[in-house]
Amino acid sequence: MSQMPQQAAPAKCPSCAEPLESGDLFCGACGYDLSAVPAAPPDHPTLTMGGSGVGPSGVDWPPPEPESSGTPAAPHLPTDLPGTDSGGRPLPGSPVSPASGVRFDRPPEPDDYPLQAPDPRVAASAAETAEPAKVCVACRAGRVDDDGYCENCGHAQPRERDHMEQESGPVAAVSDRGLRHHRNEDAFTVGHTALPDGTPAVLAVVCDGVSSATRPDEASMAASRAAGEALLAALPQGTHPQAALHEAIVAASQAVNALAEEPPSAREHTPHQNAPACTIVGSIVTSGLLVVGWVGDSRAYWVPVDRAAPAVRLTEDDSWAAQMVAAGLMSEAEAYADERAHAITGWLGADAYELEPHTASFKPDRPGVVVVCTDGLWNYAESAEEMSEVVPADAALRPLHAARVLVGHALDGGGHDNVTVALLPFPAPPQGAGSA
Image 1 (cartoon, one colour):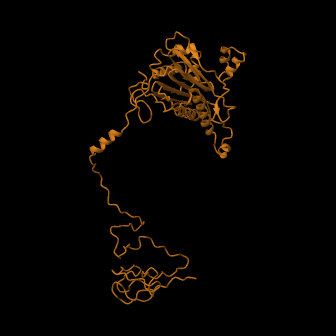
Image 2 (tube, one colour):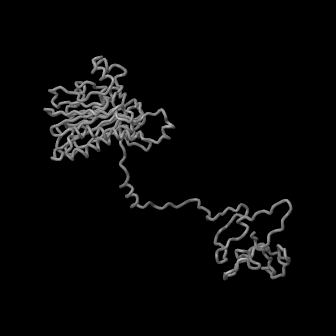
Image 3 (cartoon, one colour):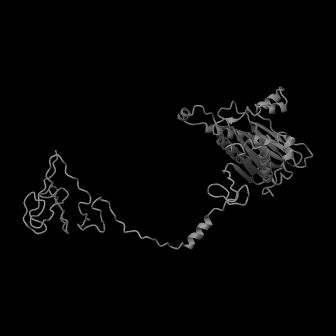
């Protein structure tokens, strides 16, 4: 067993050199406190561990106090002994409260602090990097504060996805949360590119999240992005637009299916949740070809510019109502008046029965515009004739303005659902053309 080395008391008082006896705590002549640590000599020779009269650290510690019966000796506080540096000199400026052992190293604080003048160079740099002030979407005049309210009219501003607008060359789209839903579960992608021969091509994809499914907003966003990326990659390589749209819908389906790939532990905590799901409709317009593709009940309409020819609905819903009409069991008016009308029979998602993308190609004989939308719009303009009446006459020249008008039409009608619409002019104009 290891033993601690014994410590010897000093033979003479460090203060007056009076001889001391073993066990003295104070000098009998001058009253010097023998428990104080003597100042170390300026030179520090190498010390032998365990040498006579010296502790293992080389410090000549005072002997322990005699044990008292029943009550343990009080421990030493950090303030009981003065601190020294490695040269044996007292540490500079370390006043200590003897009562509490709390350090008070900072000097007294002044009553007032002089403020330094701002650097004009820093202020100018901050002004250059500051974002422009947001303008209220309601009054178009007031500035929006940090809480998301207009300082002029007090209108709460929409969240980023509550109202989205995008223009890509001659194609544009607008999406709005509507007046009844707590979030926007629609999503879209618009874009323009060129075919291998240099002719222009424009595209739009619109997706509607299935509200009864889990995370429908994520499903619609994943599907629209995947389909848009697939089209922009395939068309410049010479893939036929109808085949490209079919493959884009397959890519969108795979993206939605991937959202359902969660660990088994997540299913244990949420056993009643179903897979994310959405519908999809897309269109590609070139100089002489119009292609549409869809799964679900989102639609595409053809509206000629001159209105001399009738407007046409280009898609057939994957829905209960469409099945009733196709089977001859109900008229279209009766079927869509039924509360089961919007029950869809086709969708993108891991729990879909079978993926069956529908595609069709058309060659219109006159200029026009393709309206690609969710049921949040066509609920208020269901037939092709009704849609033709609400589409502005200059929609092919000002697609973004026309998309805003159509969204406004749905909101004025009640806005019971999310509203998303994209407009593509036919034929696709040369690159660089867009809204006036």
